[in-house]
Length: 368
Image 1 (tube, rainbow, N blue to C red):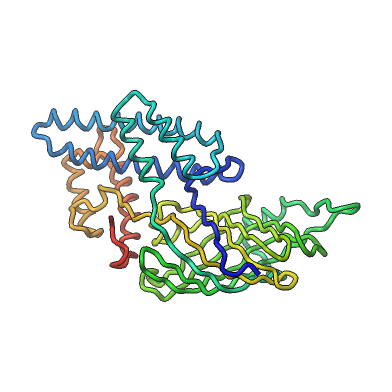
Image 2: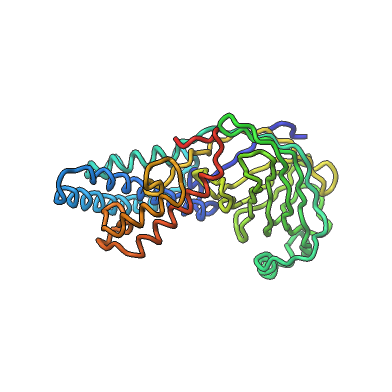
């Protein structure tokens, strides 16, 4: 048996291999660009403290131009570094910083160095998972994405003189789970059904294809606000299941949990590697104790709490609308020098994102 072993939980902290993590790399880069836009919002607000309209306008123009150049340079350096296929997040970060240090433009260099440091810094979290998993016949499949994936999947594999037929099954998971997040212990149940394809008659060491499905973490803890967190396994991804010698098994799930309001983690598309042990054929024991460093404090859009009262409510929307009507520079969110419904729609996008996360924060999850 594996017992209490260490499990990896990569949340796209590095683009470890372009063949394995391309989508996660894209997600990470998107998060970096969002962070640049948040920094720009802070700069524009600070420009408003200057004494004359001319000085404020020049300050905003400089901030916008610098940020646009930083966006372009970030994409350029990121794309080059991804193709180099560094093996760890630390190696990826170090190489990004080396490239940034070579930049001649001081303001952009300093901005990107700070950005990369903040992107890769996180808080440790601990989790214990104790339960079981069983491969069995699935119920009627109605998810159109899974139906499509199954229709495109191979019907057999080559395993000797005759092909081995692949059968559609489900992996049922049920486990007691305890997560320690920033000192707050959240106990609950992790359960779900994963659609898999198994070789007919195969026993012992083997590979099992993962098609799709979902896991749900349910808890009565107040921080979840009564809403379970669902991790949906993405189709046509790097998910897989490998049964090795002595039944030692690793289930890898490329999952997306970002739909839940509590998804204040910096990275929203985790890859879970969960070790388990096959006790009897197609019956597995899960016993995991793991520590991983992926949690980041929720960082709201600076403009969301528009009246700066540390609340996210209708008063912010009203204040923003009033400021927009008088062409307050802070409300030109797409920086096109117009003050119109495009800016208001963008504000509502930012506000809605932050309001949902704010509502689900407990006193222990502070905004740092």
